[in-house]
Image 1 (cartoon, helix red, strand yellow):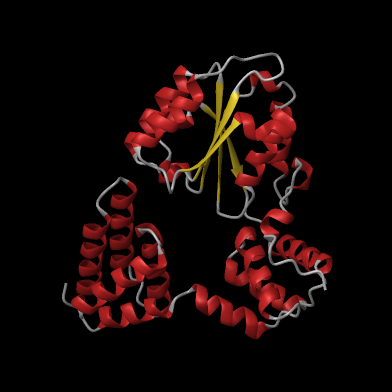
Image 2: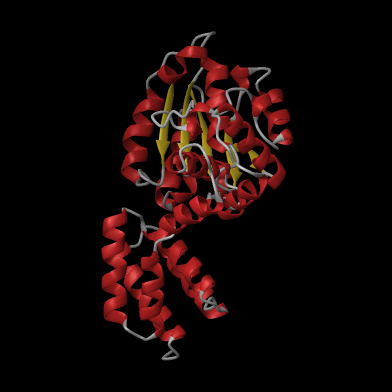
Amino acid sequence: MSLRPQLMWIEKYRPTKLEELINQEEVVSGLKNLLQNPAEMPHMLFAGLPGTGKTTTALIVARYLYGEAWREYTLELNASDERGINVIRERVKMFSQYFTPSEQVPFKLIILDEADMMTPEAQTALRRIMEINSRITRFILICNYLTRIISPIQSRCAIFRFRSIAKEDVMEYLKGICNNENVKVNPEVLELLYDYTKGDLRRAINLLQSAAGAGAGVITREIIEELVGKVTPKVVKEIINYMKNGDFYNARKLLFDFKSGSGLDGQEIIKLIMNGLIENGLLSVEASQILAEYEYRLLNGAYEEIQLTAMLAALINQISGRG
């Protein structure tokens, strides 16, 4: 058996050419036109749901521009980890400032993943850097939600919208990986895997590899369900139960214990709470508005602990009928 758990399949099977991208014909066509004259390539903004190939496409562009030396001329940052204004002023500004262009390498490239997680202040600072250093630096900004990118940045970029990948295409791709890795799986299980990952190909491949390891090369429905149960923590259900009973103290304690142990950020916690409310039939109009309000506050740099505590209080009042 050729299972190789030491090598992440998401990297092993990552496309290296535009033609290998799945279900993104418009993006591929547009990029090919722009890259006919690389020296005139504009800043670019890749927008679309997670797992649709945005980061992979950015790396393909970097390899196209610089060949094997692409790492030397490319700075990759994840804005969800490094979203503050100081990172923009220090790392991004420093990398973009010092460079002598040549005919072979007309500019350096900065790939900023999850750019929609940056605060408005950081985005404003980034916009100035994009303007000042546009002669020697190009940016590829990657986001899930285009509306979270300020208009001055959008207007300075060529925007590419990535479509969701169809179920048939995801299942066919996963089937190809299974064939290469000598993994046994039936179509019903692949469909289940797609349903759990909601079309996110990256998550689907990671879950597929975990399942292949757990099943010693044979993936069953039971293995997928067990793994997904671990990914969606049972602790969230306990938090929801405390909320239903109006138990603010224990709900808050459990939430922050879980947050500390899992390493998740505030916005990820809000998504889990939303999913828990949906599963329990508790996601009302009012609860949706509460979640949206506090997710927006976190996006704009508010203090996580205070905002999550206030969100929990508001949800408890709404769910338990105390509001």
